[in-house]
Length: 475
Image 1: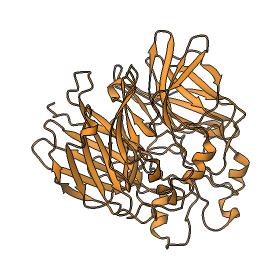
Image 2: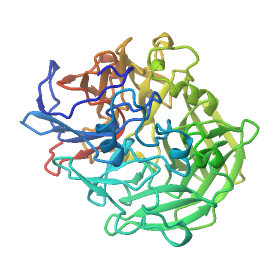
Image 3: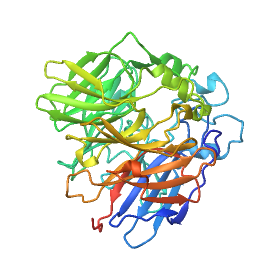
Image 4: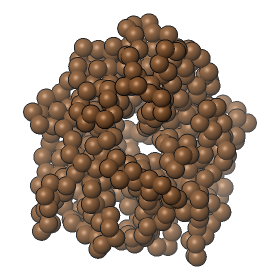
């Protein structure tokens, strides 16, 4: 499957054997990932969710399995002939059939952004819909999941499906809690916040009324606060409901408006809003409390306009002209509302991650997919570790024609809070669509992978995922 020209990745169930290196001793668990397994429009992120699971078992073979989430979008796409256009309304493209067909029709869920285990359930996540629950072993689709009723619509907000649950939940290793949010863009735009305790059911914690219909893709969490950055990317609801434009095209960049930093206390206290210079970001790396200051790292882009233009064509995978460059920035917000910020490193980066055990505390290393040579186009061809204390990057670049996914950190010893461990990334060859599973020493990324496991079929270009340790793991 050439990633530039669409097509379908076939479902996989296969044992994997290294062609380079060997699987590290003690690496035991399953890496779940999700992304677009097909491409239903020229907008890069319009594809049906293909969830994959790569399982490392001590003394046994590595096994890869992938399966499409059986959403209405997937089922409709099966019956669509090539060239007919999208069968349903997508985030980046209207359905074939004209404006009247798309009028008042929300984008259909593709469940393609992330996958996570929450409250014992394996969930495929997409920010404008409820989660879709899967069977952990077979990856078969069970259907939409309202998390025990926490996502059930109420009052005037009621609709056929429940409230959205974003693709970016945050875990607190100290408390065992999972926090997440979802945005509803009805007559009154609202941000809904959810909490899943270590033991017990998910609960709807609070609702915050938003002054505008902001695009809110991700958030970060400290031990005391949830951190949202509401950049001036605002949904034009009239353009969407009239059928004139799909959701991503109806997002407007308001360069004359500030970014609003929304700080929500986890204990239920009064939230704060601090206005600062505008920027656009998809993803946070992490956040922490530093005394009375709140510090957070994110990948900052100049604006949404240039990002939207780049995402609007699959040809930009290999076309370097005009593609926006994101870089890692650090923000510090004081109790008075003073905002300080600076760029941490000049190397282009996306899909930033940290050791998940540090998600609500201090961190030093940030991992990500990087672009070392901008002549390669949008493709993030490198796996990188950024040391935020000394400002250096430890990078391995696969070169032109390759795309590295978000690297996820796996600790060598889960009980030792240090930076010893592995990074696991999917690496795709753009023209053939083939996928390798690459395992790196997290402290020596530039040395290259310690193990490479080719997959017999493409796993698609994945966006996000989660590492789940096996209960029997001996690290």
